[in-house]
Every structure is written in structure tokens, then in C-alpha cells.
Amino acid sequence: MLMLQISSLLVLILLPASVIAQSPEKVSLGARTLLPAPVWVIGSYDAEGKPNMMTASWVGICCSNPPCVTISLRKATYTYGNIMKRMAYTVNIPSADFAGEANYYGSVSGRDVDKLAKTGQTAVKSALVDAPYLKEFPLVAECKVIHTYEAGSHTLFIGQIMDVKADPSVLNDRNVLVPEKLDPFFYVPGPGTFYRAGTPVDTSYPKK
Image (cartoon, helix red, strand yellow):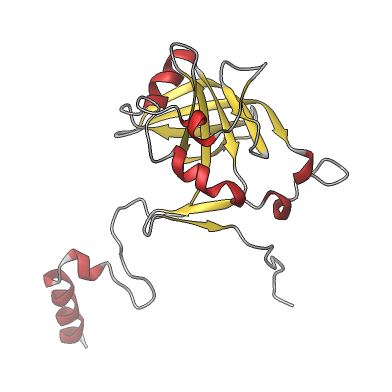
């Protein structure tokens, strides 16, 4: 028995770390950004006051009190410079009907193209923060930057939510958001594809 234990230990020592990391249930994919993520379109003004929209997926809710969301941007992006100057941004949540526009907003730079002129969508000036939001997208959060953090290749902007605005078409009669009406979608970095969020799932435990 002792010899068997020693032999097993030697095998583990001699095996490459990548092989040891494998298990019968899981396959190691490496340290990569492969997790499904939301699709948010970030609204900002440039130095001349021109509105710009950029699709970002390195995003999320990060605090409840005060209510905050975070977005992560590379310094090379046009939106990064806009937000640093204005210290504000909006989060615009598209429905699946606007997947094409969301994809476009993330595929070209506002330095080179007037994206709103191209899509024909409408920028509305927020009364609460120094940033525009999209009239056509059904759900919007207006945010002021309260913190920034250098994470590496990306800068994290933490934005305090000053207000959330919703189109009546995605609310019920109690002004509560109805996800099926919003019809949101998410981004999967591996294939680089958008997918609908789907329908509610059974969360009962134990299963009935």
C-alpha cells in the first residue's frame, strides 16, 4: 500500500500542471475572459458635446447602497476619454430588436464615425448627469462616476445610479420591469455571439 501511494505521488509530481488541472468533470480553458456577459451600450459626450454610444460587456452591478454599476474600458477607446472629461455616463439596455444597433455601436469608433447619424437613433440629454441616453432603448441608467480603478488593461469606472428610466412597454401595471417584455440578451466572448436571455427557470429546491 505504501509503495502504491508513493508511486501515485511521483506520477502527480512528474505530470505537467496543465494535465493535473484537468478533472473528469471539468476541462481547464485557461485564464481567459470566456464568461457570458451583459450587453450594455454606454452613452457619453465628447469634448465638443457630441453624443457617442459604445457597446461594452465588461460591466455589472457592483453596489446596492449607493446603487452603483461598473464598466471597464481600455484607455484607447473614445468613450474612455469622454468619461474622464465628463465623469458621467449612461447605461442603455437594448432589447433583442436592437441587437444590430448594439453590435454596430461596439464595432466602430466614435473618433471616425458619427454612430447616431448612421443608425438614426436619438440621443437625449440627461437632466441628472453630463451624458446622453438613447430614446429608442427601453431601459436606461444615468450614472455619475464616483470612483476609478486601474485593473490592468482596463480602467474600472464605478458609476452611482442617479435614476433608472424605463419605457412603459417593458413595465407591468405596478411599474415593475417585466423581463419578457424587455427581451434582453447577453454576449458570449468565445464565439463572440449575442444570445437571448430566455425564459424564467424553476428555482425551487428541492425540485418538485
